[in-house]
Image (cartoon, rainbow, N blue to C red; front, side, top):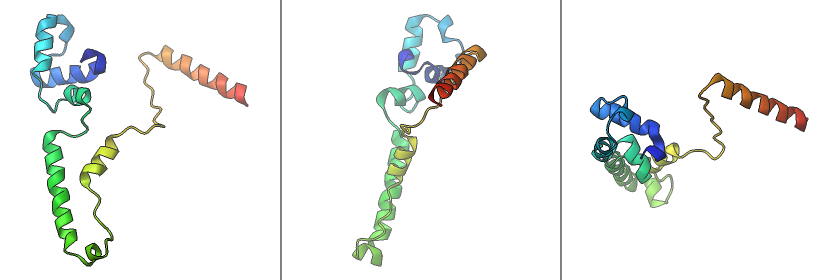
Amino acid sequence: MINVDEDALICDLAETYGIFDYESLPVQLVATLAVGLRGDSRIKMKVSGAVLSQRDLILSQIADYTALNVWAKTKDAKHGRNKPTPIRELIANANKKDENDDIVGFDTPEEFERERQRIISEVMTDA
């Protein structure tokens, strides 16, 4: 789990158990606590590839089926028009990362400055 997303694991351990420095604990204990996290914890959802918790999935299905039932009784439904977009799809698509998402973080000002200089020199070379 640490290799997948250490920050998510740290947040989950802090939220669930009040542990802010997991590295000070025995590895076996951290592993046991990590396995004991809820299914909708950040790290477990990331490991499983889930974009919605089971609860949110069920609620979105209820809303989608309700909207579909209401739509089915309209004139639009008779002509196959304006079918409601499932909420589940909207949520799942909103959580997907855009391929053009180039957000980068830096741990130190020096790292930022190096990258800034690299980008400037790259732009100047292309010009």
